[in-house]
Image (cartoon, rainbow, N blue to C red; front, side):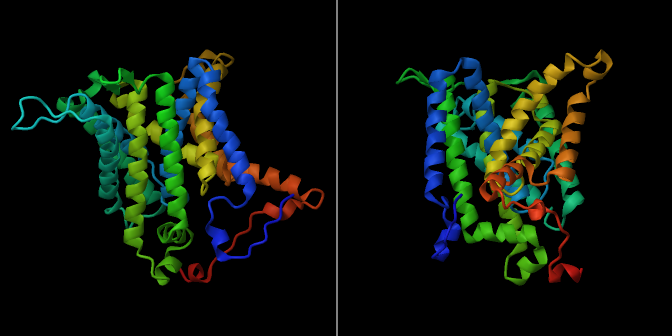
Amino acid sequence: MRFLFKTSYEQDIRIAKHSGYYWSYGALLLVVLAAPYLLDEYYIGQMTQLYILAIAGVGLMLLSGYTGLISLGHAAFFGIGAYTEAVLTGNGIPLPFMDEPLVFSFFVSFPMSGVLAALAGVAIGIPALRLTGIYLAIATFAFAIVVEEILSRWESVTNGYTGLLVESIYFESLDFDLTEGVSFYFLCLGVLIAVILFALNLLRSSTGRSMMAVRDSEISAQSMGVNLAQTKTLAFALSAGITGLAGALFAHKLGFLSPESFTVLQSLELLVLVVVGGLGSIHGAIFGAMFVLALPQALAIMKDYLPHYIGEQPGFEPLIFGLILIFFVMFEPLGIYGRWLKVKLYFQMFPLYKKATFKRQKSYMKSERLK
């Protein structure tokens, strides 16, 4: 059992609350670094996919978990990042003063994918400033449908439903392909670590505290001088930009893009990821990515034991995702990470643990009573 005695205000904004964090996360880092040399190629690919989903989960967590803005359109930002990466590294951008299209290297196209997705986030964030709750969710849902139609109709750039090949990240001088197995695994792992560190430092700053204040109570945040429009727009931009980076990596992971890969169902998967993982925690994005990656595998096994007229229905998978989302909202709103905290606290407090420790209670702030 560990007791933390705070002797300065700086302890509240430290990334590592105590020395045990260095040992546990250091051991975890050693495990993931050694994993590609110990596992088969299939499991390396699955872990790479896990890292990509976790990056997108961190992006959506900043918006929904820490700013309190629900989005059903993050598949649009995911697709914008993926197609931007594919176009810039493949077909390139035609310029009037050049005979051939301008093709960019990965180190230029990758950040540009995030920037373009962030600009799209600003484009949807500004009109949605006055929207909250279900109305904001509907607006982002409509935006996802619009982007999906653009990806399918703008054939001169995206090739429509014919699909678009994604060039590998190959360095001729070094005879090295960065999208191959282990090298791409470490690339995705490095981006995930960088995104997590960025998110943690952002949340310790005044900007991150403004985002959490907006989530808890917009009236109270505004009364304390928080600029609601600026905070919400910035949250949309950062969230969309990080999701766009995940989409760029996803493009290289697939090697072939089609509009079917960025439908509203993927937005639902990302929402399930943050809700099931645990809203309001970076850990929740990681746990949620594990869940979302494992769920299709479990459903594929489940279909073998279900009647044919049930398991082969086209809406079976969205139905399961929706039911799981409803279940967690009703019975475990803190998600998987919240359940882990409860289990950990139980063993820390044993035998003094009380069942009412996490009992949910309805409470209001004074400013909210005046609505």
